[in-house]
Image (tube, rainbow, N blue to C red):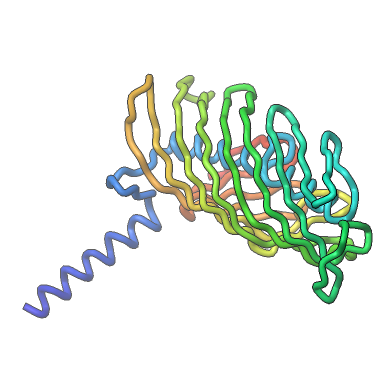
Length: 255
């Protein structure tokens, strides 16, 4: 009886390991197809890059705001509230700036060394073969603001409703994607205004529909690793790799 129970537990562990290493396993037992992985990679690319209202765009803006600069299209209130609109995406940041001893500054200025930021942004973005409506929230911390590279860490949660056309298959699918994000030691170069190191880990739950009918759901782990040359590598479930242009949001499958 004990041996039978151990064998059963071993099979459960093996099944869970297979889900994490080989396929994306959703709560309904569904798995992502190769086409699904390509679509999710495209969504991750858009949710990360600069010119598509993604994480990089917001990172650059908060670094400027914490340093006392106002990004193009933004207004800043006396309470540190910053609002802006770019490409149909509305940004709302609450920035608290501190000196090196952690004391809160009256206003963010070039002497800021540390900052805490509540980030909220959302709206609808339309690109060739891709349309998405986003709703994003997060808490970020900035360090080393007096240095040439700023360190960012934090977390976030957001959702995307996307219409994605897969050029290779000429099919259009609708996805609802819920993200949990962890920003891990992301270094942002002040000169290039791009992340050069660190990573973002996204845990994504996706629901797919075709012609208005839900066809399945699945979960994907996405790891975005910054390469230091204006690109990042997207790794989905440890085995599906894509390169990402951090400025444009274009992506290319590697394997």
